[in-house]
Image 1 (tube, one colour):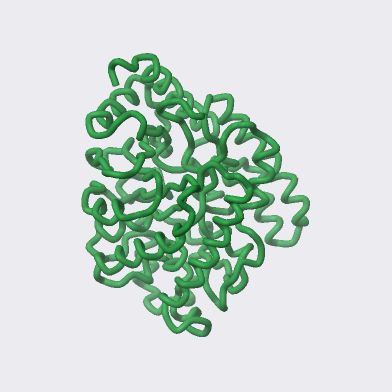
Image 2: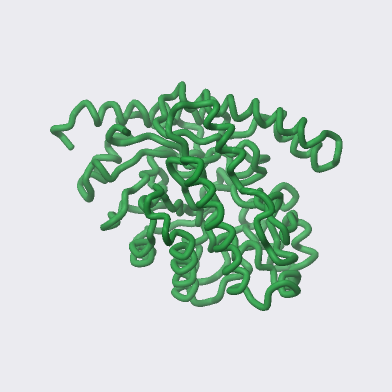
Length: 383
C-alpha cells in the first residue's frame, strides 16, 4: 500500500570512488570478481540507506553493480562484447563524423562503453536477479528495478560492421532481444519485484533531431532516417516484451540525455510529438523528466500514470519543496492525484565514472521530493 504521490528514484545512484577504482582493477585482472562484489555490496548498502533516510517510498539498489545503465548486459549475455567508444572509432565506417559527434556532445570516448553484438545473443545468466535478492535483504520497502528497453538494446548492439556475421539485419537481432527481456521479466515477477522500469532514452532523439543522430550512444548509428518508422519499431518491440505481464507494475523512462551537466549538449523539446506512440505502450507508468526547462510543458497521457520528474539530477542547486509542489499542481490540472508519482528527472549516476552529483546532493533532492509529497498529502481538499 503506497501513499498518494509515491516518491521513488529513476534507478542509478552515484558510485563511490572506491567502487569505480574496483571496476577498473577488476577489468585489468588486479582483483577477483568476489573482491569486486564485496565492494559493490557495501556501495549498495549505502545507496539504500541514503534513500531510506530521505524517506523514499520505493527504492532501488542504485545500480551500483553496473558500469552504466545499459552496457552491463555484456557481462550477462552470450554474443555481446563491451567496447569503449574509442574502440568503436576503429570499427565504424564514418570515423570522422562519429568523432565530431563525441566532441560536440561532451562525451569522453575512453570512459563510456557500449554493448556490441558479435554473435548470437542469449541470456547466460539473469540480468538483475542477484541485484534483487541482495536488495530484498536490505530493505522492507517496495523495490524498483531498471532494465534497458528492447529498442535501446537493439540499436545499441547493432553495429553492422561486426553484427552482420551473426544476424542478417537489426530486426532479427531485435527478436532475440525481446526473448532475453521476456525471460528477465518472468524471473523478476517470480522474485516479487514491485516495479520494473524499461529505459528508452533514445526515443527523444527521433523526434527532436528529425532523424539525425544527436546522442552519444552507438545506438545513434543504427537508426533509419524516418522517425515514424523507428517509433513504430520501438512500440512493437516494447509491447512484445510486455505481452502477458499485465500483472506486473511496469514503467517506461524517456528523457533527453543524462551524460553531461552542460545543458546545451542535451536534447530539447516537448513530449507532445511522442505522445501518440507513448499512448500505445502497455506499461503502467511513463517516467518523464520535467524539472528541466528543456522538457517543455507537462503533457497528460490518457491511460498511464506519470512518474513526474520534479528535481534535476544534473544541477547542484537543491529544489525547494515549494517549487516541487507548484510543479505537481500544474500536473494536477491535467490528471488525478492517484496517477502521479514523484521522482528525479533521471538517475544520479547514469555512467559509473561520471556521476551527475555527489550522494549528499542526490539525497537532499530526494528529501525535497519527500517533503513536497507530505505537503500535498496534508491538503487533500486542494488536490
